[in-house]
Image 1: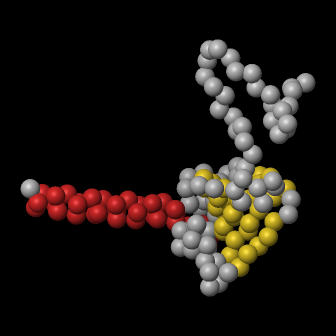
Image 2 (image 1 turned 180 degrees about the vertical axis):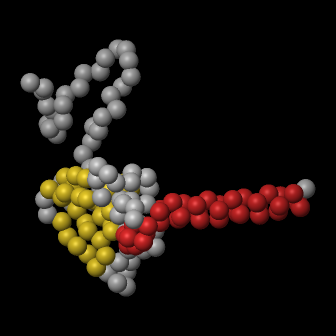
Image 3 (image 1 turned 90 degrees about the horizontal axis):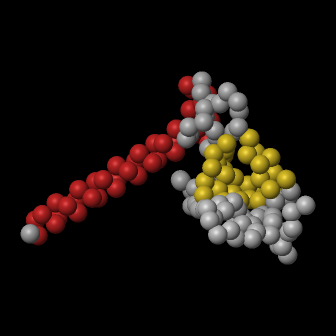
Length: 145
């Protein structure tokens, strides 16, 4: 029997040697946002692939999966005139889950496990813009010297 503290987490006695425990010590405090990646669905249909088309965002961390099991209540929100800018492009429809509810991610055994194509394209575009800005700054600094 593992002793639990007042928050329901295992009671941990620190050792003198070795690394510190890296498991999750705190409960989630941020809501979970679930977005459906429409461009990835279109890409999978056109190219016969099966990239994950569901984005799950908890705080600053984003994860992608094929399916989702939500253990507890959730709400579907549609705001056509106030998009959620936490997702690239500003989602207008998303699912919101309270922090105390468990969200279980499910992956296909024969699915593609890389990032969805729209995420790869967005990151490449951001990287390209970042490198352009750095080149402009370096040209500006050379002229000043």
